[in-house]
Length: 112
Length: 113
Image 1 (tube, rainbow over the protein chains, first blue to last red):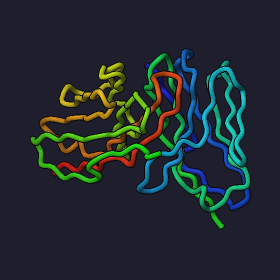
Image 2: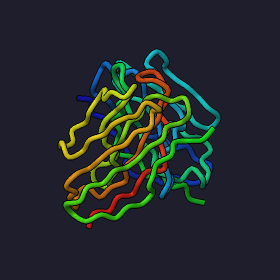
Image 3: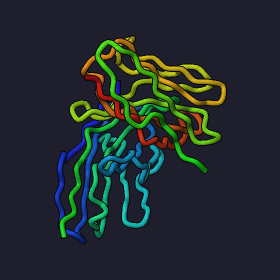
Image 4: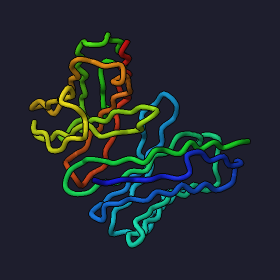
């Protein structure tokens, strides 16, 4: 089955700096890659996603890139703010169902 | 538009008991998936339902089961609870299988003592 690896597990940046989180997947049939942000005690929230027919997608300060050949995708957050501090999960979905395989999460801390 | 609603929010059960968790998807959404979240194993897929049919199942023992009703609401059941079943159980709602975003509920925090 699908396996998703996520790095780093923790990331500390200064406010205003950029943060990059990377994920790799194993199933070449995967065609949808969402990113979720989970604050402490809250639900995972979808922040951005990308489909396999697109190489890059941007939404204000966040962007996601996808390299299908290398089977990896990345989340980029620019001009980080303290409210960006949370755990970020990448995920991959293959086939016609809704099963998401998640990475292990990245604890992002934005320091003042 | 109301979001995904899960009940109850918190639950404490004793080993050997059984538990039923409920999920009401976003209005109009017909696909419901369940996930178990633990510090050690992360987010793991349990099962997916669409049109009252289980479409997909993760690698969990048969003690974990679920169902979906005609109004798309879903329940999951865990029988013969074990200490290791303590986790946050999350439900995700999607419009249809395979081609749409998944939105999570707040989850049910299950503690088995």
